[in-house]
Amino acid sequence: MIRAFFLHKKDVLSKVISNITKMADKMVRYVSIEIVPLGDCAISITFGNKIDESIHLQIQQFLHIFNLRRVKGVLEYAPSYRSVAIFYDPVIIPYSQLVKEVYSSYHSALNTAQIQSIVFRIPVYYGSETGPDLGFVADYNNINEQEVINLHANKEYLIHMIGFVPGFPYLGGLSKKLVTPRLKKPRPKIAAGSVGIGGSQTGIYPAEVPSGWRIIGITPISLFDLEKENPSLLCAGNYVSFQPIEYDEFLTIKALAADKKYDIKTYKRER
Amino acid sequence: MKTPIFKVVKPGLQTTVQDLGRFGFREYGVSPSGAMDAYSLQMGNILVGNEIGEAALEAPLIGPVLLALHDVSIAICGGDFTPKINNLEVALWKSMVIKEGETLSFGRVKKGARTYISVAGGIQIPRVMNSKSTFLTGKFGGFDGRALEEGDILYGNPFIRRNRLLDAKLIPEYKNPLSVRVILGPHKEKFTPLGINTFLNEEYILSPQSNRMAFQLNGPKIEHSGGADIISDAIPFGGIQVPASGQPIILMAEHQTIGGYSRIGSVISTDLPLLAQALPGTKIRFEEISLNSAQNLLINSRKKVQYLNWLSRS
Image 1 (spheres, rainbow over the protein chains, first blue to last red):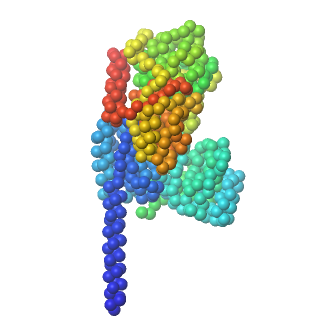
Image 2: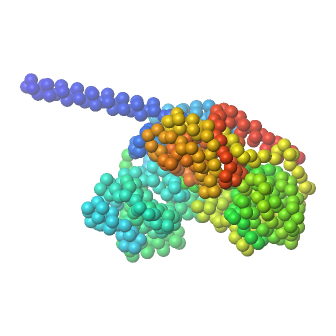
Image 3: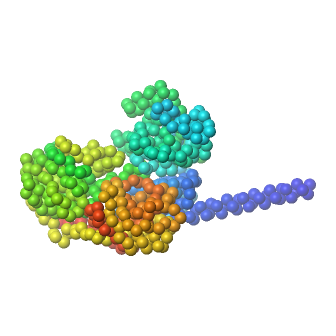
């Protein structure tokens, strides 16, 4: 009885401590933006010091609110892993005014519901000639090819940023069991749509470019289409999930996509 | 209406169509591109009577040979590559008429690294994401996303305008050694005080490995404090990254939007046109300036350009 009481007390105590830690954690997270000039026409706002899903989601939350305000003189922005750069015209908006807008957006972002992310289902034909490194990735990690596919597909990867080439997503969340070093000598070019692993990163190449990543598959859909008003299919803050397909499906989707008749499957991500 | 204005007889080294750049798509990895030397582009447009941000041809080091297919006013601004019409030397920073059947060509590089050919009525080319600029790595914008090639025909809405001459005070001087002003950061903490001192006091030589994407410089090694790499973040035009080699690289008009090297500073907007005109071998020194002073310079130069534009139109 006495022992049970103590146990109970200990439980309560540890709960209290854990709650305090959580609150402190939240506070630390919430007071930690840092604003620095990025030359005379941009600022960089840093939200944290590591690659972390929750840090990136704070950036998205902030951008969502900041965008709604339609601040005059803001030209464009570029979110990345742990920071966002805002490009502005100092003739229209002074630095001090922009900084004020940023802080104010940041504070309202803390009090708004988390934005809804979309998951894009990207069909991928793994292996064969268009995924030449599938075998290497399997061997390197001491698993078989099917296990590589199972670990890579049907998992939600956060799009931290788009860059390197237009439409290229930097994805977070690759399984540790799939981490594979890059090629010593990059290939001079890989096909548009190639899906690869480079170290602890994974991504999809929207265009034919040189690459040192291990290519494990290919998607038949286009990630960057100049005929669309917004050419990039993907944007930071959303998610990608790979869906394994067979070769005949690859051909069918490729033909449909070429006629712009393929609807990419998406769903709302559970919060 | 679309009128043929030029036929490309020789394309030159890498002649591209550029305006003031493509904005609003950086979050999708689209580089702004645009003129390396926005000042020369704008002066050319003012001289021929175009909208200030109209597209022109940008030609580095070896200019093109163009056959005029229509009478039109043109202006050559920026680098002096000895421009000639029908082999007779013509002046820079002024508008003049080229007649149908005449040939515009270039000779020896006297000053600067890029010349801008502006045409009255502009260049008729579809806008991609609101801009006529060529994005070479992205392979879109401008003339089919590439540099001009022999046989290409350029279209426009040509007109002739009374010749105008730019006041000598407004013609920039391309110096060697060149001093460019920088705002330090955003990764100042990635460098030792000695590293920053080296950067601000030593001379760096512009390497021939320099293009629309980046200018490579060689000089005394800039010392890092705990590694050269950062968690990749956004890059501005003029950002100066320093990889582990300690040799600075300045990101130019067609820079990648995201980079993973620490950046010691950014060249201010007012000095970018002068830097863009530096030839390989130019000695470059970096001088620190405050954000406030840099923005005042930018505001003043913008007012000057707008005033000129207003003058030329009234």
